[in-house]
Length: 150
Image 1 (tube, one colour):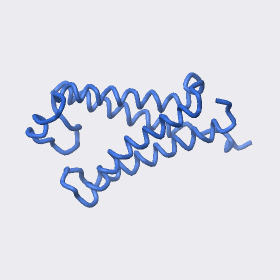
Image 2 (spheres, one colour):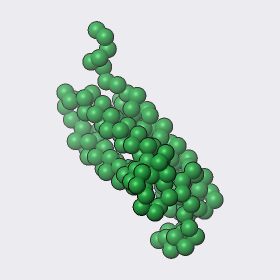
Image 3 (cartoon, one colour):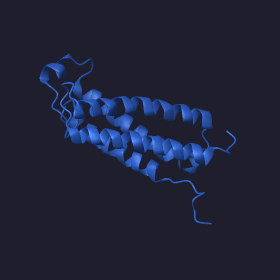
Image 4 (cartoon, helix red, strand yellow):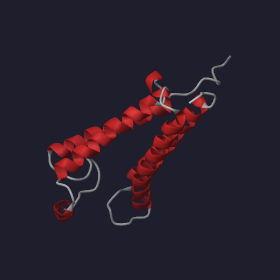
């Protein structure tokens, strides 16, 4: 047996690390009451002032969503997460792919074509990597749980 029949968990761990990094970056900006992300385009003061939440609250919510995303990623490979009914987990993963994929798509389009947000080409590459890792994580989960009763 060469191990090719075993599920590959590395995409889930990589996604979890990305989400933890996202949460950390958002927490830094929450602490500073700034919108945006470290290393990303600057958010103009007018946008910040017109935002529906104050910047710190918005960023703390974003940091919490990053922690939740990391938890979901780990849940796809951890025993407690495998007890979540498969259809429910697939629904959560689809919602995650849509939400994160939409943000990544903006980074990709703005990074390579330019729509005025300020993302650069390297952010576009990161967006592609994030979508690919999410899809690999979902594929790994589907493969690992295809015979599971759930």
